[in-house]
Amino acid sequence: MSEFVNRYLFRPYWRLTRAMTLGVRGVVRDGDGRVLLVKHSYLPGWHLPGGGVERGETLMFALRRELQEEGGVEVAGAPRLHGVFASRSFAGDHVAVFVVEDWRAVAHSHGHEITGCDFFDLAQLPQDTTEGTRARLSEIFAGAPVSEFWSREE
Image 1 (tube, rainbow, N blue to C red):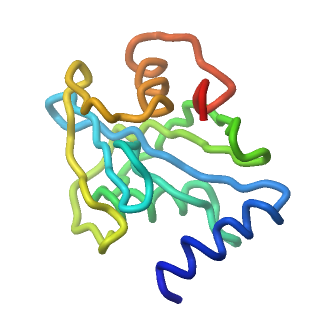
Image 2: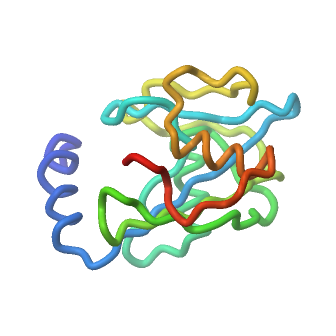
């Protein structure tokens, strides 16, 4: 199936017809304390790597698949669940965020979906890092209160 058909025809249909969608995101830091962020071809800004949980997948399977595909990260240990966050813009859309502390670098397989992938210092995130991404990093690394929602504005 072409990426165009999937992105522009099926995704909007799924959002309207599914009672709930579930996604995963991974917070991965390198040995220098920098965090892994990705830039998608179809969304503005820098994000935590991750994506949708497909029918028949567990959260862990989806997390491992998405981190390898988008960031070239192979999860080696047990990720820690940080929280599950509801979307304000798509009712029924939820994202589970995991902190991945034990991992190793492998080849990525993101193709044209990812236009940028790099580690960034927490004090020098790209200007267009999304609000939800900044909020999760602040909760995990700066002790900010944990929200129930992905972001304030969506």
